[in-house]
Amino acid sequence: MKSLYEIDVYDKSLKPPVGSVVADHSELSHNNTYGPLPLFYVDKLFVCRDCNKEEVWTAEQQKWWYEVAKGNINSIAVKCNSCRKLDKKRKASARKIHLDGIAEKLKKVT
Ligand SMILES: [Zn+2]
Image 1 (cartoon, rainbow, N blue to C red):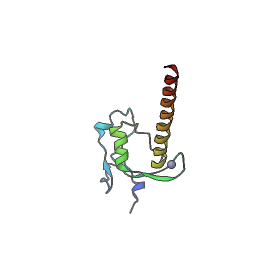
Image 2 (image 1 turned 90 degrees about the horizontal axis):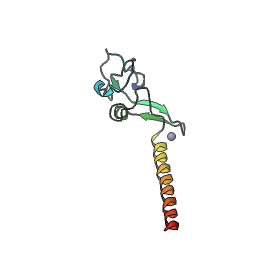
Image 3 (image 1 turned 120 degrees about the horizontal axis):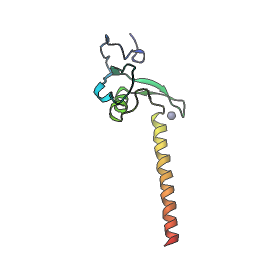
């Protein structure tokens, strides 16, 4: 049996495999691509750009990214969950430092 990772998501003769999520092409119309659009999404393995950890990008996450967030069909996940969380934390704390700095300046002025 083929593993989910090797399935050809463009093959119209295939039934969507168990664990896959069917793609909605009307939601993919923001993609100006001449290439074929996937018929369904299957879990994909990718290597995190930051920590080189292998992680699964699930079919549901892909559907959300391409159809709800309107991500480009050629874009894929580049960071694992924990690195994304870390990024968020870093951004939030950078923002806090920034805002604290402004508050500090305002105090001096007034
Ligand atoms: Zn990572």
